[in-house]
Image (cartoon, rainbow, N blue to C red; front, side, top):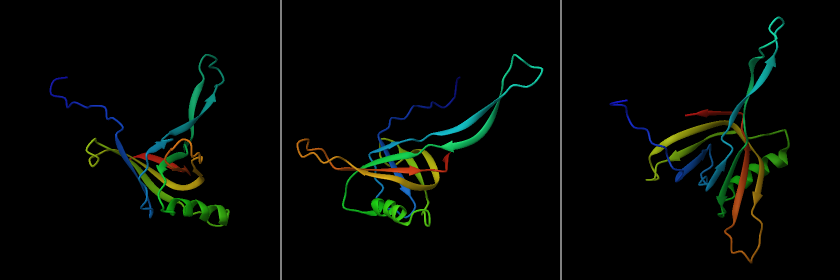
Length: 148
């Protein structure tokens, strides 16, 4: 189409994660940006050749974030708060995963998540023979995911 603006695919070079009131959110990996609707199948009487597909509830997958370990306990504290208080007090937070252009500054995409809380925190295995960097992983249960 003549005159149409060219739209290039973006490489995954840089991204950032923003989580309400947590400053130490520079992650190196993010997985689970997924929203899915349940499908209900219904075969109506009199129409034996077609199965109707109806939309059911929509759910977001858990988001798994991995980052290099630094001496900032903010993520572990959030998880520990929930683990120690049980169902009495769950601090849910909103946030965003923001894709950045190769310059590391220009925003090219944003996915917002709502009412997230950490269901799992994990530290990498300690193995002195590998020289591997220490990483921590945080898995968030998310109620809603939208494109920003």
